[in-house]
Image 1 (cartoon, rainbow, N blue to C red):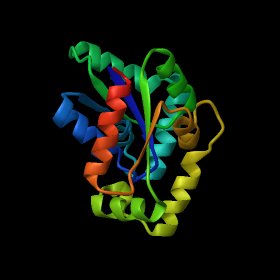
Image 2 (image 1 turned 30 degrees about the vertical axis):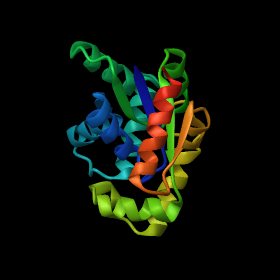
Image 3 (image 1 turned 90 degrees about the horizontal axis):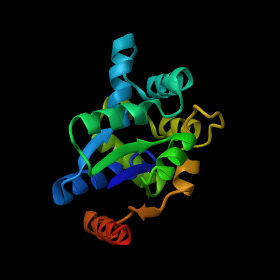
Length: 183
């Protein structure tokens, strides 16, 4: 089974991934990690702006499914069948994945809750004010080019939407219900 996770920043995509890896034996593939490698190779700062630029640039040069193809190559090479891909942000890519039988899950939460989680997470891309957090999100959620990010459009086509405003246990119950729907 292959699950692709889409969602807003700080919504809990990583929490869902960790649960599926630990409790269900999935193997985690992060689009972000692939993009970060390219950012570092280019000598750019690792931040959300660079993520956006490099992610879109590589899709424009090599196709909207460039990152997905790298992930599937690695998964195949490593013999992984039950994988979770974090985080889907391009609509054309998500549509193609869905056509290939990938289940698309969306994770969302209230904006203030997401910002607090992002700050606590403390990654290089999360060290921003609430205003910058909001501005970054606005740039990522509704771009219109085929190679651009459009998180909201990907979330709108999801097979399942998980709302993460409560406890981890409440989120995990939603994950279990979603898995039952895909059996």
